[in-house]
Image 1 (cartoon, rainbow, N blue to C red):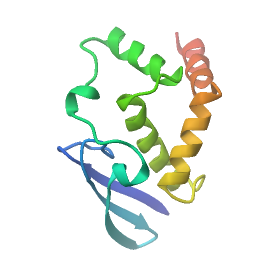
Image 2 (cartoon, helix red, strand yellow):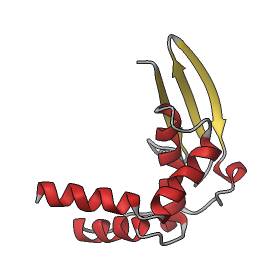
Image 3 (cartoon, one colour):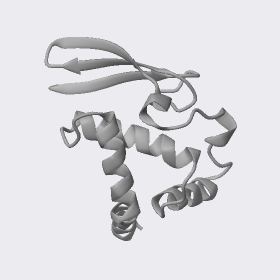
Image 4 (cartoon, rainbow, N blue to C red):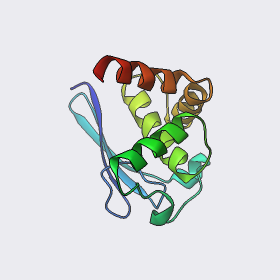
Length: 125
């Protein structure tokens, strides 16, 4: 593994969190660098768990996913942007989380993320 992030977001999430700070262990080569990510410092507001809770059925979660990928603003989109940013950083497509957030937002806003979802659905259904 060349690069990875191991994260623990408040309040016990296995992803970066907009609910509170996220403890990160960044693995690069054989080194581990611990740090804390505060989404608010990156311009994403802190939210309550109720604001990002998933739906109560697969259909509800699919609708939430589509609304995010259609560009609907809000806490769920912010959570997606933060975690997409982390993936972009690990993949070397963004230099830091702030740049990754901007790239993820642009990808959603131009419809590219939704197009990928639609292509995936077309191939698997």
